[in-house]
Image (cartoon, rainbow over all chains, first blue to last red; front, top):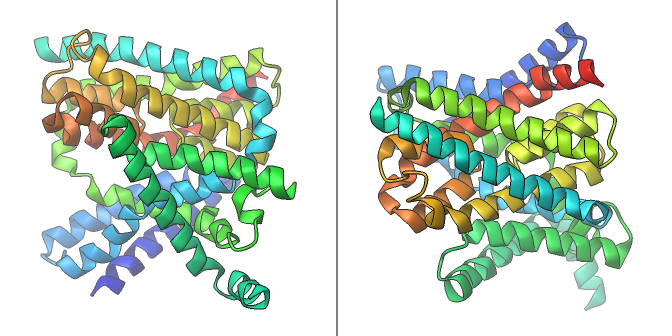
Length: 119
Length: 253
């Protein structure tokens, strides 16, 4: 049943966010500390546990994967509601960060990739 | 007519949001295939057009929520809001095969660490040069330089202002588009022709759409390997940017 997958995803998300909130309180940060990342780890662990017991049914997968497929459209919706008008004043900053970030990562990828072929 | 529209716009906001998203994605797919021959990924075009529409919405309404302030598009606020966004991002972790990931070995881990740290430090430094001094804005922009997902997730967690979040998304999207366009041209130069280097590449570049788009334009068989490490990238970025890296930035400023 797909709802089990969606419910599992929801449970992991809520637990992860709760852990992130707790971690934030623990570290005295007025923020959620890595809740989304922790939720991802929880989901991975849950997936492995289900797979071991043979409970990873196609229906359950569908309930999770549907939301994974919606991730790009949801990011598009997120972009569509940003305050872009206010952001445009920082134009050169965006271009500079984008270009230099990409260039440095390409160079590092070349370096590490060469090591990968040797190793 | 106007009455019916007003009713629909308020009562069916979320449903209209799905229609609007489908339209944006559809038109972007057409542009991607027709004008760029698939070189620029449809998702990158969709995100750029959404940012453009958000700008248009801001100009039309003077509001702060971009296109979501325009009548009939209010559903986008819920669809692209923090709750569903985090939900969908967590769902993408389901696709990661842990045993495959382990094969990337230490180089994959090093690539992931460098791919998070280097763009972050660069983004923070650039934001500093442009006059930002508060730890929240600096961290958010640095996180946006990692990927356009890590930026807004970090910004939302830290309570950054919407303009800063938009800037962080813009720099992440700019990077994603650059990666998509430039990868096929630099592939030979950086030895991007085997699964291992593709995994290293994915870990370093991070942006899933950039990596999958760029690798698709280079050699389709490399896509899953690059995407695998890139999928981890966003999770790791979302874990360390609002926590360890934010604390480091706050200690420095």
